[in-house]
Amino acid sequence: MQVLIMGGLAGAMMLPGVRPLIDQMGQSSGGGELEDPIRYIGEMQLTGMSPNGLGGHLFWPVIFGWTTVFILLFTALRVREKGVGSFWWLLVVGFLLVQGPYLMILNKPFESIPMPMALFPHLPVLDMIRVPHRFLILLILGITGVIAYGLREIQIQRGAVATFMLFPLMAFELQLPQPQAINLRRAEVYQVMQEDSLDYAVLEMPIDYRDAYTMWLQISHEKRLLAGYTSHILPSALPALETDLMRALHPAETNTDVLGLPEFLEVDVENLTEGQLDAWRRELVVDKDVRYVVFHRRPDFFAPSRAPKPAETAKEKLMVALMPYRLNPAVKDGPKRRLYGAKQFMETLAQQSAQGHAIIEKMFGKPVKNLGNSSTEVWDLRPWAEQYGVLELEPEPGQEALPSLSEDPESAAE
Image (cartoon, rainbow, N blue to C red; front, side, top):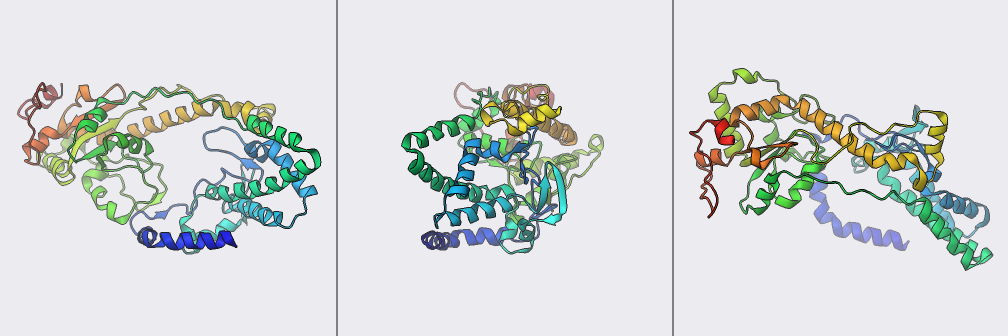
C-alpha cells in the first residue's frame, strides 16, 4: 500500500511536465506509428533469451544465474510466509509481459497463442510501450523479493556462513567478460566544432533515425543535428526533413519500422541544373543553418572483418544455452560480434546513401581533407555561408583565411 501511495504521488508530481510530451507522442500523424506496434519480438521467450547480436539462445538459468534459480526453487518449496506471495505474483506478471504479444519457444513463434502484451496496442497510454524488455524491471523486482525471503530461510536453517557463500557464487557466474577499450579515431571536425562558440547545425550522413553514435558525438560539440537519434519522430520535427533535397539525401533503403517518415527521392544527379543546385545550397546553408556536412563511410573504430563463428552443432548450442555467463562462449564473443554488426550496418547504410554523397559533392566540391579521416568525409560550408551573407568570418591570429568560392571547388577543398 505504501508503494502504491508513493507511486501515485510521484506520478501526480510529474504529470504537469510529462502531459504535453504524452499529448505530442500520441498524435497519429507524422512518424508516430510503427509498422509493427511491438518491437524486438523473440528476444525474450518462454525458455530464455535470444539477445540481438549474441548468436545463440540462453536459457533463463543462465540469464539470472543458476544460484538464483536454486534459491527460487528453495523458496517455492520451503517458504510459506504471507508476504512472499506478492513478489511471486510480480514475478509471474513480469515474466508473462516480457514474452511479447505471442508465445515463442526456442525461436519458433506460436502467433496463435496470444500473451498479455497483445492487448497493449489497443489500450490508451499502454500503446506507447512497444518493447517487451521494458518489463524486465518487474520481473527482476519480483525475483529480488522472492530470493530475499529464501535467503532469510536459508540463514535460519543453515546459518550465516552458508548464506554468505551463495553471494560469491552468484557474482562469479554472472560476471561479464572484461570489456576492451575501443580506439576511436574521431574526425578533426569534431574538435573544431567543440572549440567554436557559434551556434549552427550539422548534417550527419548517412541520415538514420536510429543513429545514437552521432548523438554521442554531439555531446562534445553541442551543435544542432539536422537528423539524429530518436525513437519517436515528433510532427514538429518532420517539415525540415520532408523537402526534395532531404529526401534525395536519404538512404535508398533503411531498416526503420516507423511509418510516416520521409521517403527516399531518386534524382538524376548528373543532370541537375546550376539553379537547382544553388537552391539546394541555400536550403542547407541559409534555411537550415548548416555549417558542416559529415559523411561516415565506415566506423571510426576498429572492427573485425568477419563475425565470430556461431554455434552450429547440438553440443555447441547446448553449451551456449546452459553455460553460466562467466564461461559462456557466446557471451565472450559478444563484443566482437557487436563491433562487426556495427561495421556492417554503417557500411551498408553508406552504400545506400551513394546518391546523397554524390549530391553533396556536386553542390560543394570535394571534401576538406584536414577535417576528416580515413573513415569520415567533411564538407566545410562556412565559405558558402559567408557568400550568402549569413556569416562573417575573420581569421584568428595565426589562422589562414577561408578559401574563396571564386576558386575551383576541388582546389579549394585541398
